[in-house]
Image (cartoon, rainbow, N blue to C red; front, side, top):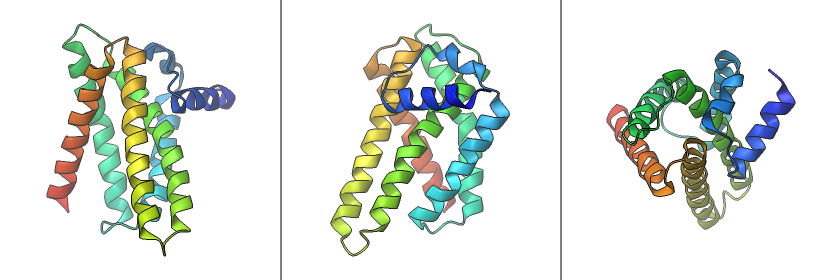
Length: 168
């Protein structure tokens, strides 16, 4: 795995310039999965949520596989067919690309603890950016309609929020 190639692909994804979904199969799944799990740690610490770090790691681990299965089903409904491993690879790469700006926003927001409105708007901005970035990248990489990818991502977010609320 060339680290410069991965960094360039992550920068492209953060700028919503996705390649074909098969392009991301070139990255071995274990190293990128480990990178993804390592990025959960700073976001969990910076968010200072009620759940322990182990919960966030397990939740992220499990939902990575659920996301890939759901998106394989979702895009398969409109005859966009790729293997489960292709969707899993892409989901991990897109999660890394989404985590990087979120972590940066959380670091900046941690300096504004005394100003809760900055934290509120920073959090809303991060959430909207991730939804925008992920849904457009999925649309571009699968050659599907942007609205179709957006709805699929919203369904996934709803499933994750419901699961997290039920588990807390």
